[in-house]
Length: 157
Image 1 (cartoon, rainbow, N blue to C red):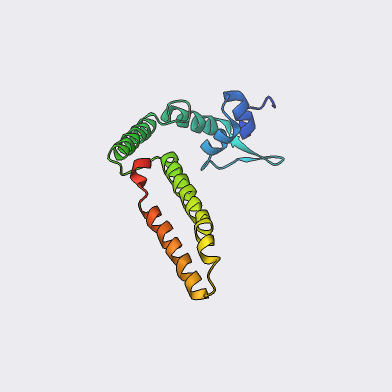
Image 2 (image 1 turned 135 degrees about the vertical axis):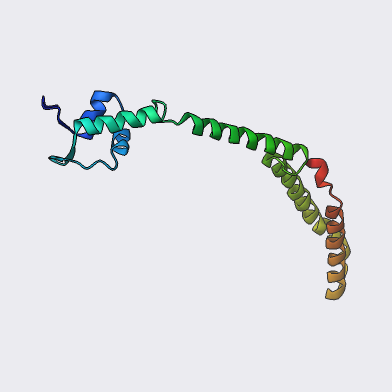
């Protein structure tokens, strides 16, 4: 850093103030540079430092606006309470409970479908007529579907 402190780059301001260079750059938006030092922009040090510290004072010193953060926190708490109420009313169901219920339905469906050949094979093995075979298979599929309709998902959820 040069001894001439009338013009400073954002990195020099960051080093002097302990504020991150990205934050300094954001706070200098709207301030016209007075020149360049290679690729770096040079700013009038009085104006630049005033902008950096004014923004720091406005936001509570750490880049955060206390009122905005309190409002955001209150909104998050309200959302959490609303979701908890929806769960109590059963308007909102936790994903893990839905997943378990679906796993049960798919397992039961798989079991029913895989049992059809076992139940139908002895009957259709003796048949010569394709229409009769089809009728037996349809009866077995319909029976499996009826059993699946009887599943009580609400007891799982």
